[in-house]
Image 1 (cartoon, one colour):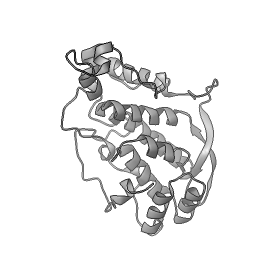
Image 2 (cartoon, rainbow, N blue to C red):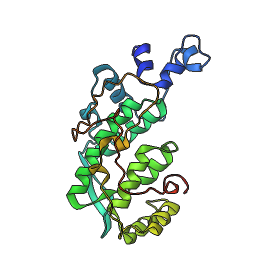
Image 3 (cartoon, rainbow, N blue to C red):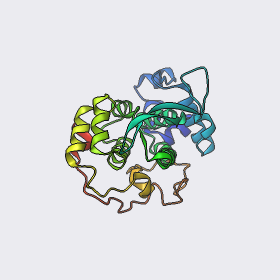
Length: 247
């Protein structure tokens, strides 16, 4: 890929590949990302080169030889925690977001969030459920203050009851500290708004430094304003400790 193109879309490449830089990547003229599936970077590459998110690449189960469109995972709603079929694209999208976080590529993260936004909405509309199997993975692999983690926590607050939240904690699906903090806040009496019913910009990054972004300024799944427009989107007061201070 073109060095300048990479640098204009991700701060990691802009810094690590500077000709006069002291980073080992610049000295070797090679960047290695061993913790990410090759398909994840391929999706990023297509986004940089073609200006669009390649949904076909994200489909299927990358971690097995088979490629089913859906797989059984643990989900929850206000009544129960059980197994249900969920699109295998979810794991790929989460990895894409984490890659964007690692590369400091806010435009790619915003595009990925638009895709996650739509997928979580579709899962919820099926039976008012939210995936629970990947909560710990997201918590352990996102940076401090991650908007993906914030989105997931908002979804937990909206979709679960105190009973199912504590049950998910008992099953080890949600870190115990988070489950207790959310339960203590009281989920059932509160009037919540589904994360996917807010403006898309609620979960977009708004970097102070402008990087080239092939994404349009409109959320592809809702048509609402996108990443350069900050809306007054919160409908309830946030307890910031819920997002950061738990194990």
